[in-house]
Length: 126
Ligand code: AMP
Image (spheres, protein in one colour):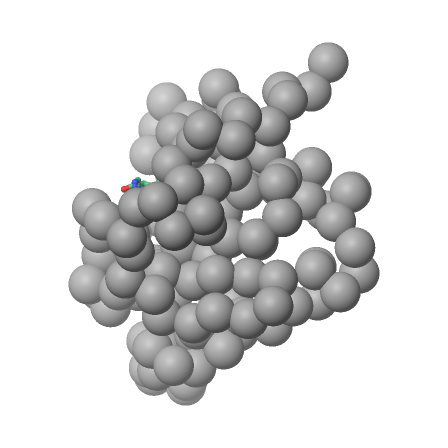
């Protein structure tokens, strides 16, 4: 059975205004803010405002409006950071960790946007 949503997770507290965050962009359905422990010069987290645990929960259960808004925000963040790939320019990586094997720490769906330096290969050997 899928993990139930825990409304005491830290991103739920951020969405309720109980914990501050460094907001980059906010829309009706989505919030983007800087990661508190950045792993690259640019490290932004994009989260839906709705209560979704992880990527498959969001992708299967969110409304079309929520999904479209979320994806548009990820694109807008890349544009705001100025990291869109060019012929010889930067680039970035998006990551959504899920569950135990994905080593997800915060059980509220989020996408990491990492940029600002060469990021190495996608995965280290296990
Ligand atoms: P994950 O391991 O994919 O669940 O990533 C959770 C991310 O949330 C980590 O990169 C943390 O540094 C980040 N994080 C945890 N607490 C906060 C917070 N209060 N504000 C911003 N980012 C946070």
